[in-house]
Length: 196
Image (cartoon, rainbow, N blue to C red; front, side, top):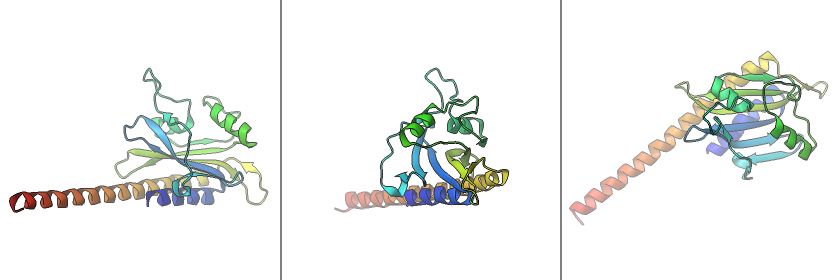
């Protein structure tokens, strides 16, 4: 179950890094945008997409604008386009990225998104198939939001890599199952035509 697998990936990443929230995006089939797959936030009780069954009504994040220029203003798109992890201590004071959508979400929910850790998910062929984004690292001893540490970043990168490979393997198995069913249907059709 791909939804359950993606859920487990995001929950494990949140637990390991002490993140309050997280989002898992997947690159669309045409490779032009990032689609929200799962959104979780513990303190707000938000659980959208994945195994929750709750739909996500957020629009896709385009990787390029209408003129074909890279969408480097959005952190998740930037991580894909530059093939790099982005670790932000405070989104509200960070220069170079557009956090207007985050601010709207924060105002609507009475929340304060602060620290971000955005990691591209690469499969075994080194292709980026998604993005793992963690929000608000909470220090367990104090309950205060702090920046994600270098160790958190390494752990998230390792988990994102393993997750991408597991996801790719699951997709390959599904494709093999579809190919096998098509092959059986083709044999059935050939036998029926030869000897009704």
